[in-house]
Length: 111
Image (cartoon, rainbow, N blue to C red; front, side, top):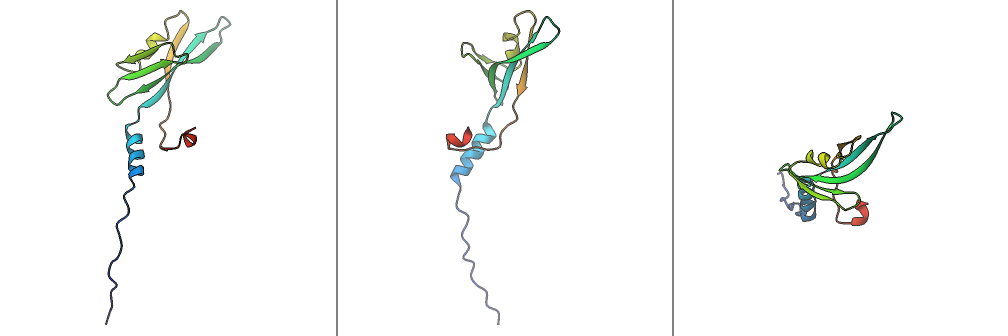
């Protein structure tokens, strides 16, 4: 005679915090920097981060200059380059940050 033990396994508890972190990661905007490049008289070039931006799934972007004096809501990230390449000898380009695959509720862990 074979005896079979009843199945007393319980379903895994629902991980609400994990679901919230996944939601945040799946819907996070892409981050980018607007970098200004300067042509110097001696043939060298220099660069600085002029602004930070967030690009959303629908294509639009919000951009803030590093000094906080200029803020833009734009139809696309590429439009930000126009605002930071107005001076002669200055060009601008976007540098995209690779997306993070981690999320936390603790601000100390995010630093």
